[in-house]
Image (cartoon, rainbow, N blue to C red; front, side, top):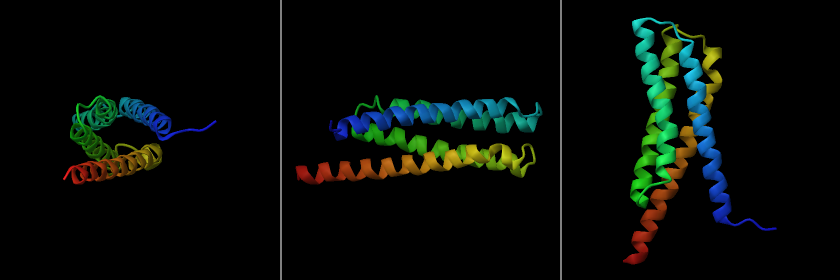
Length: 135
């Protein structure tokens, strides 16, 4: 039995969709454990918004109308994932949460950012190759 690039790509997309959704769910649970102060609510809202945006925009990317639209949506995922890492780091710096409680989520944010960045680089390269091939 052989696997081709199409089935590998579909599996990768399913895995990443699940992984980004799981990331958002884990952040949701983390946010629900923050204190109910004005400062914590601000950070919670920022963190929750960007973490859920990663999952939503990753899904939207695969419904893109063009390669450029796909790339733009992936870039949003990349930025939002990096921002989620920032807000988790900020939670620790503000002493609203102990580092060990967010360590695995921060690692996941870094890994997702790296994967999405690699996807952006590959897509950008493919777009450039397609343009070069037409000229």
